[in-house]
Length: 79
Image 1 (cartoon, rainbow, N blue to C red):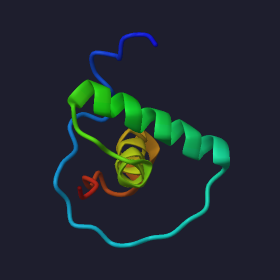
Image 2 (tube, one colour):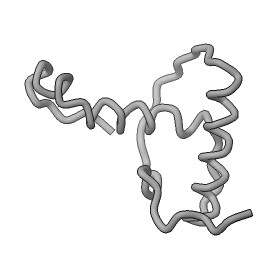
Image 3 (cartoon, rainbow, N blue to C red):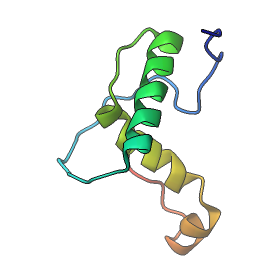
Protein backbone atom coordinates (compact mmCIF):
# COMPACT_ATOMS: atom_id res chain seq x y z
CA UNK A 1 0.00 0.00 0.00
CA UNK A 2 1.35 3.45 -0.85
CA UNK A 3 1.92 6.18 1.73
CA UNK A 4 -1.19 8.18 2.66
CA UNK A 5 -1.46 11.73 1.32
CA UNK A 6 -0.13 14.48 3.55
CA UNK A 7 -3.49 16.27 3.54
CA UNK A 8 -6.99 15.34 2.52
CA UNK A 9 -9.69 17.74 1.42
CA UNK A 10 -11.45 17.06 4.72
CA UNK A 11 -9.14 17.93 7.58
CA UNK A 12 -9.63 16.79 11.15
CA UNK A 13 -13.33 16.34 11.83
CA UNK A 14 -15.20 19.08 13.74
CA UNK A 15 -17.63 18.51 16.59
CA UNK A 16 -21.13 19.10 15.24
CA UNK A 17 -24.78 18.70 16.15
CA UNK A 18 -26.50 16.16 13.96
CA UNK A 19 -29.90 15.41 12.50
CA UNK A 20 -30.60 11.85 11.36
CA UNK A 21 -31.13 11.48 7.61
CA UNK A 22 -31.37 8.23 5.67
CA UNK A 23 -30.55 7.79 1.98
CA UNK A 24 -29.45 5.13 -0.46
CA UNK A 25 -26.30 5.31 -2.57
CA UNK A 26 -24.60 3.12 -5.15
CA UNK A 27 -22.36 0.38 -3.76
CA UNK A 28 -19.32 1.88 -5.50
CA UNK A 29 -19.90 5.21 -3.72
CA UNK A 30 -20.08 3.41 -0.36
CA UNK A 31 -16.82 1.61 -1.21
CA UNK A 32 -15.17 4.95 -2.09
CA UNK A 33 -16.39 6.47 1.17
CA UNK A 34 -14.98 3.49 3.08
CA UNK A 35 -11.62 3.94 1.35
CA UNK A 36 -11.64 7.67 2.10
CA UNK A 37 -12.44 6.90 5.74
CA UNK A 38 -9.47 4.52 5.91
CA UNK A 39 -7.14 7.15 4.41
CA UNK A 40 -8.52 9.75 6.80
CA UNK A 41 -7.80 7.46 9.75
CA UNK A 42 -4.23 6.88 8.52
CA UNK A 43 -3.66 10.58 7.91
CA UNK A 44 -5.16 12.00 11.12
CA UNK A 45 -5.05 9.01 13.50
CA UNK A 46 -8.79 9.31 14.06
CA UNK A 47 -11.09 6.39 13.32
CA UNK A 48 -14.05 7.50 11.22
CA UNK A 49 -16.70 5.69 9.21
CA UNK A 50 -18.43 6.50 5.93
CA UNK A 51 -21.63 7.62 7.66
CA UNK A 52 -19.68 10.28 9.58
CA UNK A 53 -18.00 11.50 6.40
CA UNK A 54 -21.13 11.89 4.25
CA UNK A 55 -22.37 15.21 5.69
CA UNK A 56 -18.84 16.63 5.72
CA UNK A 57 -18.24 15.67 2.09
CA UNK A 58 -21.59 17.19 1.11
CA UNK A 59 -20.80 20.37 3.05
CA UNK A 60 -17.40 20.71 1.36
CA UNK A 61 -19.00 20.09 -2.03
CA UNK A 62 -21.68 22.73 -1.49
CA UNK A 63 -19.24 25.26 -0.03
CA UNK A 64 -17.09 24.88 -3.16
CA UNK A 65 -19.98 25.54 -5.53
CA UNK A 66 -19.75 29.16 -6.62
CA UNK A 67 -23.15 29.01 -8.30
CA UNK A 68 -24.76 27.71 -5.11
CA UNK A 69 -23.01 30.26 -2.90
CA UNK A 70 -23.98 33.16 -5.13
CA UNK A 71 -27.64 32.07 -5.30
CA UNK A 72 -27.89 31.39 -1.57
CA UNK A 73 -26.82 34.92 -0.71
CA UNK A 74 -23.26 33.91 0.08
CA UNK A 75 -24.38 32.33 3.34
CA UNK A 76 -21.86 30.02 4.96
CA UNK A 77 -23.04 26.45 5.24
CA UNK A 78 -23.52 25.56 8.90
CA UNK A 79 -21.12 22.98 10.26
